[in-house]
Length: 321
View 1 (cartoon, rainbow, N blue to C red):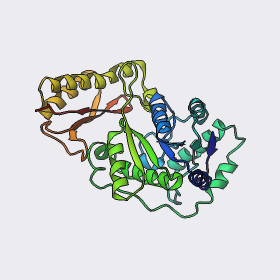
View 2 (view 1 turned 45 degrees about the horizontal axis):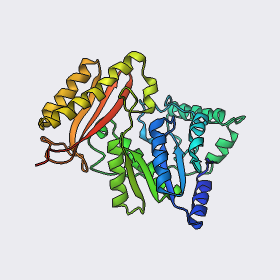
View 3 (view 1 turned 180 degrees about the vertical axis):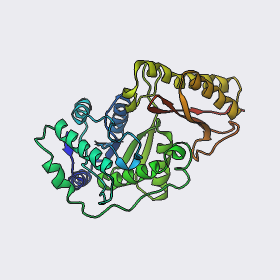
View 4 (view 1 turned 120 degrees about the vertical axis):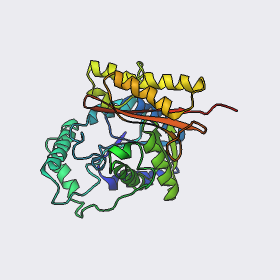
């Protein structure tokens, strides 16, 4: 398994694979890998000759008050988890953005701590090599990708700028790795739809595959942020998957009014001491809200349990006429 930190080295490897007639599948992650990520890797291996997994905590999709500095990082553990799956290459860039001189001290401290932790995970003696690599990028980054309508609802309301960061870093990965296929999990439903639209609109020659959401045995949607939950908070968070089961049953029994279904979920989460960010039933492609389930739909949820924000969703089918 090759490990690349430098984007030019990653691109050279990918192009060598292409010249050899190999088809490349790409799985982008922010690390702290769990079984949901590994499921994506398994799917990638079915789709191509070689598989590239990225591990990169993308700073541009974190707001200043969010958990960029504390987001779980374990490069060595992630590499160990990937080894049995015979992944061909891991791309763990030091940084894909150039910061200007005016960035605040707290962000600089977070980024320095992140680089130092990477050095520790990789067994490096110090961060001099990390610094020398990053000095190549000498001009401030100012170009961003926007998917103007799809970035606005759901997570876009409470996390402005989040999807600008997602779309931009995914575009950069696509240009560097040059995959034929890219695999995304449907847990981040809005992200998956946004990437699909971006690829269509910008004419990327990449097949995007969305894999079904993977749950823990207790029903909680797999997420790297689950590690933040205390035992009590985890029990409270199960109200999300519990409410989604009730929604599924209600739809099967003929309840198609969106507001009634949303209220069902809301009460379940509030009863469990959660704080609702949003609960919306939307048309699947456009993510526009629905008042009545008369087309393929998805219910999307974001809720806080103490300091942990979790997302989940369930696709819903209208009744057959």
